[in-house]
Image (tube, rainbow, N blue to C red; front, top):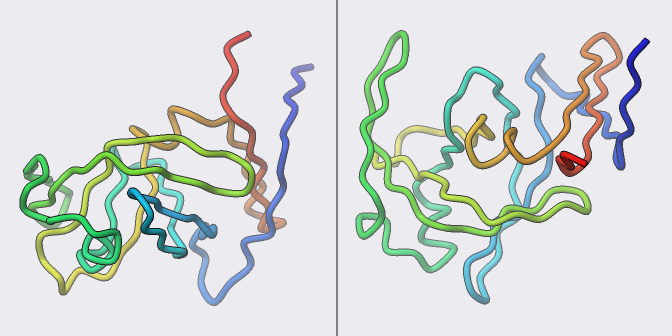
Length: 135
């Protein structure tokens, strides 16, 4: 039998079947509280365009990246941002959609999932989280 320890548990019950958690993004003195989907299929963290502006970031001065998914192609710009959820904080290169029409906030593998231990019991709508600790 394997056993893991988690620091936080969160009930993500909502309108649909998405796994959505509250997060705070920080850049300098600016802070934005949002809801973001945990997406184990997403390679990177990508957030709505207007969040970059709310953080005081010049969107297009970031690292431009073209993303290809199963059904679309889109551009985004990466910026180093503080990412906080529950009691956990990290600094990550996250991306902001170039297209302001895209209405998604996604926590992906690089910049989020690679920094936490995650347990998910979807039947109970519970997510368990702890900082990743290789020790």
